[in-house]
Each structure stands twice: as structure tokens, then as C-alpha cells.
Length: 342
Ligand SMILES: [Zn+2]
Image (tube, rainbow, N blue to C red):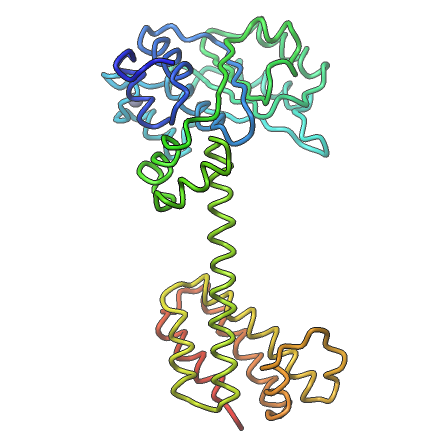
């Protein structure tokens, strides 16, 4: 492992945007700084270790015209960051095995022969090459051999061992590895701003140093927290409806706050419970499995007509979430709909 002080300036800039993996960073930085980039890379590593991110940094390395390489100011750096660079192309798999087909390789070949639009290089990122059939790999090998000098290929895979030896021997293999959990946690919290440091530490510990996996854990954690909150707000609203208190109904609806997604989730729960109340109101309550107690109480007190109207109006209100209704107005309208008793 290299320490930051041993890295060339370009590697140091890469290290600021790519966490850990100092060997990979140092080797790419060195190649970019010397202007000697191979025309084929094989980027290997488990899912979540940043292959896509690193592939894009290689693409930037191939195209960047910043005075200090990869400092981000040139048009190529900017367009690559915004995913609008015409000289970066992705080749992806399809079908059940998600393998890159021989047809995709053939159309890539045509593209590769065309001169770049704006940069000096055209970069092709071939994603998840592990399942690529030998025929497709051999077709790719032919392009390799006749590739014009303006082309850079980047293949990503879980393991380079899944590729033909002939391909492996012609590409520069870069391996990505898990990072130190603390370093990864700081990256998630400070650079990506994707979570609080304490949450990021827990997720990094659970993921064994895999940042992508930690982000997935953080995402599902926040999703389950949001679902819990939506459930509790919806229950508060149903309780207020049962109690017939306009004030508590307004307060419960206001708990949605300014969170649009929360508004949608609360609507979905309310709709489900009101449908259950409707079944009870029309005397078909026994057909509802695991009935919500609030729904049963409401079904016993409200007429089916009122419940049907509330369901329709909540559906309409829910649609307004998508056309930018203000959230305070949304919360107020929701309370008004649910207050209806005739
Ligand atoms: Zn640049």
C-alpha cells in the first residue's frame, strides 16, 4: 500500500474522488500523468467496489485536456461528469445471462472505426464481461487487434479469470478491493454526503469494506425507517378519524411535513385501510384478511358513500403530488377530505 505522500499529483487528485485502492489509483494516475495510457483495461472486482466509477475516471484520463490532468475544469471532464460526452459509449449485456452478445460487439466495431467527435479518444466501457460467450470474446479480440489508435476499451468483470487468456494478456488488469471501513465511512459521509458518519460506520462494518454494499444497506435502512414513519403517521390519522377530532386530524396530517415521498406513502396506507373500512361498511368485512382495527371502527361508523368519496379524493390528491402541489396545501387538503362525514 502506498501512502498519500508517495502518489503523483494526478494520483492524488484521483484519490480525492475514489476511496482507498491506492495501488489502482497510483497506477492509473501514473499512466495519465505520463500520457501513456494502454488501449485496453480490464477492471476486476466484486460488485459494489466501484468498477463503474473507476472506469469513468479512466475514461476521463483518456480524454481530459485540463492543464493539470483530471483537475475537472476542461470540457471533457465536465461532459463526462454530466454523462453527456459523445465519445464515451457503454456496451451492456442483455437477456437472461446479461451477457454482451456478438451482435453488440459487431456494432461496437463499427463505432470504434469512426473518429472521435470531440475528444482525442473514443472510450468504450464493456460492463460485466464475466458471462460473455467465447464467440463474442473472440469477435472482440479481432477488434482489439485492428483497433485504431483513438480507441480505449475498458472491460469490467468480477474476475479477469472469467475472460479468455488471449484477452487477459492484452489488457492492463486493475483490481479493486474493499477499503478500510473507517476510510470508507468517511468517504460516504464527507465526500458523498450519503449518510451521517455514525450510520456510515455501521454500514461499512456490516459490508466488510464494500462501499457499494454499505450504500445499499444504508438505502434499505432509510427505506424501512421511512416505511415505519409512514405507518405511524397513517395510524395517527386513522385514530383521529375514529375519534372524530378535526384538530387531531389536522395535526396528524401536518406530521407528513414537506416530504413528498412520505405524502405518497401515507396516501397508499390510507387507501388500503379505507378500502378495508369500505368492505366492513358494506357488510363484507369477513372477506378482509388481517383487518386493521381503525379500519374496522371506521367501517362501522361511516357510510360506504362517504368512504368511496374519500378514496376517490385521496387518489386525486395523490396525483397532485406529481404535479408539484405544495406540501402544506397537500396536508391541509388531506385533513379536509378525511373530515368528511356527509
Ligand atoms: Zn479535464
